[in-house]
Image (cartoon, one colour):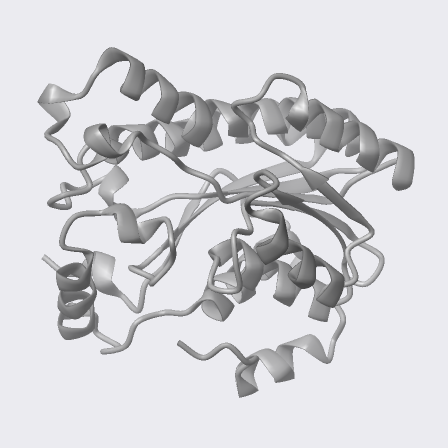
Length: 268
């Protein structure tokens, strides 16, 4: 994967179309994270950033990236821990007073539930996966709403397995389907406040989260063979799409799921 901005990215960032905007990015784990690709493009387009890290174990991997990005806010955020998400928004309120963009790029399921059949998934595993991967986005929206008096954009990360059966995606398929449905309902409920809500559905990417899926290397190889473009997407591709959805260029778009997959999702 190309860890440097592409020529297309370099061309796009010259406009600084997000200058003066304030963006929260939740979900950076390391330099290969989709969330990092989005944060990097947001920053290069002129946005100020708030960046979170999961816990003290993750902090050494995320803190250098936050410093590189010049993040104004850097805070822990484990959405499974009571009060941590709320504390992030309180820090944003105290630092900035308002918010324009909030990106949610986190998902989790216990390994035994993720790698087993859906029919065998445990009650607790399903609840945990739904809470962290879906309901935390709804909670994020609720906290962001009062900080977006002039409108804003909420973004969530999904996957094609929400709509079609992807072997070995298992438990996360129904969970991501719930997330995409939540995006649509939030778009409806928040539209009158000019808050737009989107799901982004990247093609297979080599991220730490994806490594937990069984036979993921096979999925990557098949994606290259089947995608009309014949290439895997990278985190910059996702970042550019996320940035576009936050700009006035997309001002009449909301409630959508945007695929960034080289056309893979159109193939039978």
